[in-house]
Amino acid sequence: MNNYQNQLKKKMDEYIHFVYKQTKDFPKQEMYGGTSQWRRCTLSIILNYIEGYARKKPLIRLNFLEISYGSLMESDYLLDFFKEEGFLSQERYNQGLELAKQIGAMLWTEISNLEKSISKQI
Image (tube, rainbow, N blue to C red; front, top):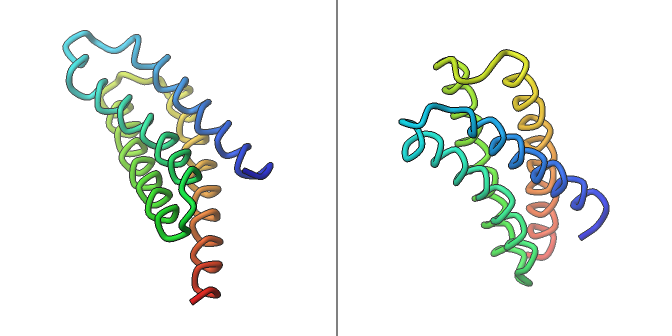
């Protein structure tokens, strides 16, 4: 991985820790519902990103990066949902939203660059 990819991975890791920290304060009745789902999809962002870079074939790597992006979109929705439900303060929501936007932009750049590289090989 190059420096850009490592920076993206670092932001993903920061976002995961953000989500885990926020969900510790959520109501216990959410433990097996939204809390668990938000944690799982957020972990999926970085786990699919890492797994994609463990693959040698560019098309397979692209698939994992796209799954990672999809998980980010799921996590982003849950961030909004929990804000609307009153589980997150405006400040915490803004912090999470900013991280999610940065990750999304960086990940989309990775996907676009890989797509261009693949199309040149075909």
